[in-house]
Length: 76
Image (cartoon, rainbow, N blue to C red):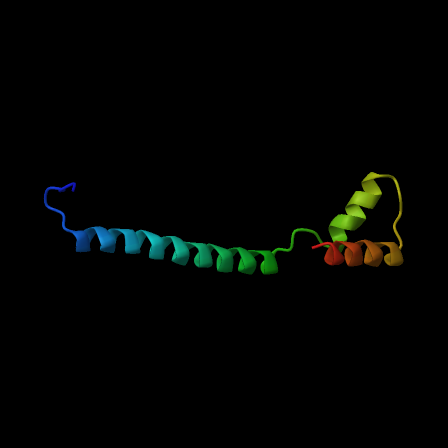
């Protein structure tokens, strides 16, 4: 049996429990903040699609833009 100077089993259990609880809490907090940020600033929008079409030298129609947006939503 290993004896740690100044530590008993309850303090070790509290330490392990705190690390596990902090990891779980941190995961859910980070997930919530990321979802909130993505809702405020979506990764791509219709203006970006228009700009990509224009860079390719094409003038996109609204139908093409809506189709690309639908495809992107479907593939999320």
